[in-house]
Image 1 (tube, rainbow, N blue to C red):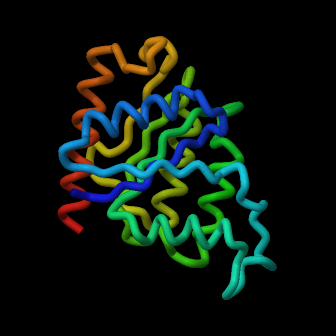
Image 2 (cartoon, one colour):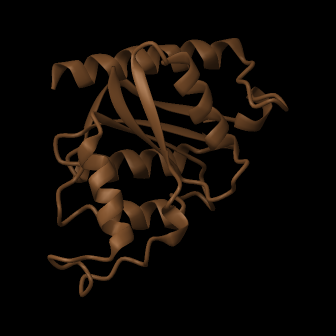
Image 3 (cartoon, helix red, strand yellow):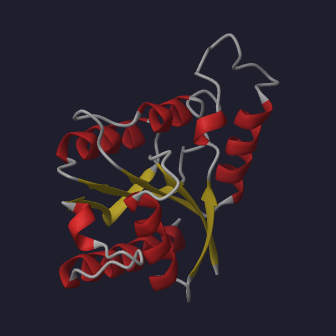
Length: 176
């Protein structure tokens, strides 16, 4: 069983991104054990002056969770054609420590459109040296229309794509 840290780029408690993460966790339950990170809202704004041997405790906690995981799944909306600030801030805190370097990562962008944030975040993850395997990045446009009131992904093509992402992510982790 592989340990996965799941991070939603949305701070909304009932966001479609958390629901997509829950669906991925359910679909991948035989192979992957998910821990959902809910600390984005309490991370301080990235400040190089605070990025010392003893960074803020919330930053240490995030870094520890990434280090202890076998892989990181990020599921995010797009805000004004970009990556949500809180998510970008979290990744900024990992640059100097190299937490993503060599770490398998999967990216799901679940939003109305999502193309710009998806491209930007893929570039960011490549820059921090995360391992993005084949078929481990998925764009789910019009995401709200593909998740029902109970939080279940009901669109057959999206479920198929999520299953492919899980299989590919597991292979990427195993190959590391």
